[in-house]
Image 1 (tube, rainbow, N blue to C red):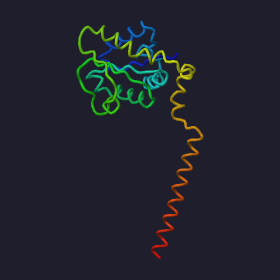
Image 2: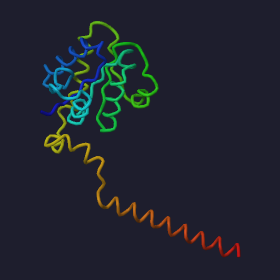
Image 3: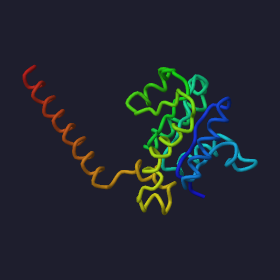
Image 4: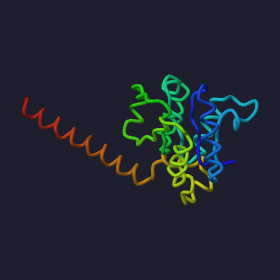
Length: 184
């Protein structure tokens, strides 16, 4: 099954992640969240990679615990490598540490620092809906191909790259000949 949103969170923030998942799903947004959607008996790391590749966006429940979680860092990196939009939902007033700041610095954050969280969940749903209901037909057909198609190069790109390399080699040969004639 394909999902709209992958929910990334630290284990200690599971209650908030589950509440966000419930609000998103009540709005018709299909969520993947561990451990609920992890296939029984499968390695968790492979299940996470597959789920991220099959989603349209990521919601990051961000806290000091998520900031320290190596798994959250890996999930965010995978999302950015897959060119997925990441919607950070900050539940603590903490700045991302250096490796997360690399990815998350230019991203607009949803701050959920004040209670009740309900008002912030409504903003989260509104922020995620455009990604979840995008009309990209190729992603609907097979979202797992999204990453492959982004990484593959069209033959014309290879032709341009080959021409540039060949041109650089020829310029280099010409420069070497000119230098050699001046030295003699």
